[in-house]
Image (cartoon, rainbow, N blue to C red; front, top):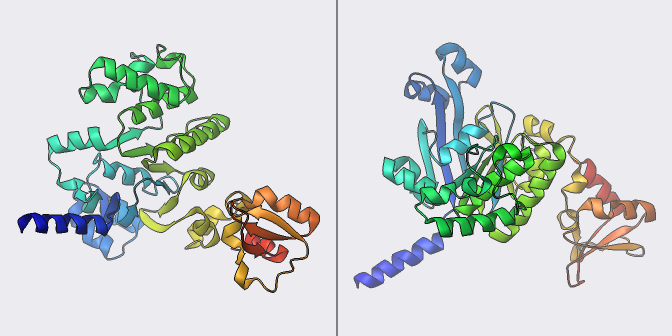
Amino acid sequence: MCICFEVIKEIEFIQKKMSKIEINNVYKIFGSNPSSILQMVKDGASKEEILEKTGHTVGLDNVSLKIEEGETFVCMGLSGSGKSTLIRHLNRLIDPTSGEILVEGKDVTSLKKEELIEFRRQKMSMVFQRFGLFPHKTVLQNVGYGLEMQGIEIKKRNSVSMEKIESVGLTGFENQYPAQLSGGMQQRVGLARALATDTDIMLMDEAFSALDPLIRSDMQKQLLDLQAELKKTIVFITHDLDESLRLGDHIGILNAGKLVQVGTPVEIIMNPADEYVEAFVKDVNRTKVIKAKIIMTPANQASEIDKSNLLKVEEDQFIEEFLPQVVCSNSNVEVVDKQGNTKGYISNKELQTSLTKS
């Protein structure tokens, strides 16, 4: 009878489909007595007002969000918006003034010192903006550092490290030192080190922002390729919207410590929550983000669209891939799946509307 009850509870837990990470009503106030200021924040006082009256700084203001297993969640905002403060709560480099942070259902704020050390070693790895490499260690030693901290013996450590060095395209550089590498190569070492420990969750705080544009683009592509294969849960911090749109399955936008919108890249662009978000997205090239299936009219509802002159495109194609042909031929669009089955249609007029919608 006891066994049956335990099995039932286990099934109920699985069916509940808990998010990988949940942040619930988190407040962070910096200052000498943050708890005394908490109610003032909850009552709606602005960040500027609190700083002027109390000398305290509001880092996060009632932030709640869910991050699902295997997704890349990008948190963005201007400097001082709270994005780096937020990511540092996930591995408890910072403790919240109020609220809870759940990882796989466990509140990390309740972890004791030894539990927290083990949690950081086993569950989360971090890639820093300024690489964070040890200058006196080789590439191989840097990549294997997390494994060394886990107590992995040197033969296995080096084997895993070499595998990750190869995965980021640095084969042949394993015996070099950081000073002998370019900025892009150093960041690849940082990425390989994060991958080597094989944690479920990767935290990336402005990981590519110190790189030159071309190197940055290469690193973004490398991360996308690795993520397609590994399906880690990635929390990525950036102030760059193009980077957010390229990398994120979902994007959360922070302003003055408040989470003002969470959505897919298309949702953020097509339906900005307020003027702050609208200002972010107003100059975005929508053709690089919006796919045909997002703006098509389903086939069974498209009786009024002229089908005499059609350009056939796949549903997952971005608008930029077929827009020039539509313009040149003045045609409407037939949207098909990979098997060639018709899924819907896009009129020339609908296409223009989707690119100018605010």
